[in-house]
Image (cartoon, rainbow, N blue to C red; front, side, top):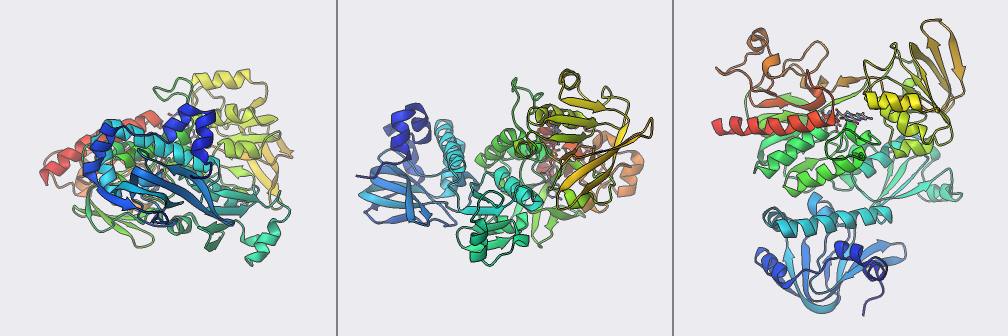
Length: 562
Ligand SMILES: Cc1cc2nc3c(=O)[nH]c(=O)nc-3n(C[C@H](O)[C@H](O)[C@H](O)COP(=O)(O)OP(=O)(O)OC[C@H]3O[C@@H](n4cnc5c(N)ncnc54)[C@H](O)[C@@H]3O)c2cc1C
């Protein structure tokens, strides 16, 4: 008999949740799975999966019992055991990432084994099983995250920009980790000494219990955790999408679900700007709002369910756009090719021209307002710079945690730049002080931001305050620098598409076809631009999602011509 595990504990306290996490399939469901895989006998002691293994198969138990075990300093810790009708797997079955746990047989019997491709085919063709698997995989991954049952230990300080960056990267990629806070754990320094790292090397990331990475880049973390290992870089894809914010993810979901072979390149983490929003309240279908992380996390899983492959921390640096298939290159020399390309690289916050801004980024200056930043400024006074919807949302959200919110706006008011529902909430909130015609002029501090100075443009009065948190939400610039003349841009650097491209634009860029560009098509045939990066886009999640899906219908038309 196995030792008590998560499943047994859950069944006695929350039976319905246990059934969603660890369902037992019916005989009819098992019969539908069997033709997709192979039957295999199992004996006690057999290791079906080793923790860290790159290619993780799926097992359905027919008879006998298997255990899922997590490597730990004490040896191995039992997570759960599965008996007849139950199956293995969690979120990494969709992402194709390494196994976080081992699978070992404790009672003899028989299993059905499917490799990842066989499982994905089954998920795409059997809606009932797809629902059961998706729900179990996602809930199991969420449980691993909640219980910090990952293969990563992060050692750092919440007052260090690098630590915040790494935490955000792991969170947005749904990777469970343990965090050791140097400011709270008295013996953390001893741990650092054990690995011969100094305080200036933080954050330190212990990856899969083996590699010690000092202040690693997001790219180094993705490589160490094997985020992109299962992706074939050699084949020419139907569609390469650059960027995985809402626009890129929507294109991936529609493209892959309509049978296209889709590869997405993402410079950082999936979710884009929307992923950094604490609560999106105006997206259709979510009357009580949804956090950007939840919305984009679901879209990410959905794209993978349909078979789209998403390369993480691989930014495009060049588009070779002479003729299809188009080459998209990344800094590390990765080169992928697509018969059609969708550019969905969005925009990022403008960084005000303040002399020492970079010194305080992550150490008092932030560009996102999620619960993570909220925790950092609890009970303190904060400054928000900007008068757009994202600034308004941040003010309302952070006012729930901060002592006072100083909102600095360069214009005369908010009416021209912010939705009415947000303006009303700001006006009704006594914790928010709105300062119009005011701009930030200086930041001061030692290792962290300590003092902020602003100037009232009407009176010229300069005021300095002891404030340690500034949220910069000051309009966006498009991520188009990497395109290097490949497609026609407007005077602000946004990509022109469809009817926006004048006769002169087309002539100057050498548009080669008799037909004019499709809606959302750039000055290169088969290269589309969607979402915030596109000239004329309205900078909303809904429009990004809409454009991503519309572009796919034109991609089909372009591919039919080849
Ligand atoms: C804090 C905040 C709150 C917001 N709240 C709302 C709201 O409530 N409602 C609403 O409708 N809208 C809201 N918005 C706006 C909304 O998030 C954006 O309009 C939307 O995210 C745009 O989607 P996108 O996919 O076009 O671009 P983005 O979200 O900007 O995504 C672009 C992606 O491309 C990646 N990328 C960039 N360059 C490269 C490259 N060279 N190679 C590969 N990848 C690259 C980026 O890392 C990013 O992941 C908010 C924005 C912010 C910042």
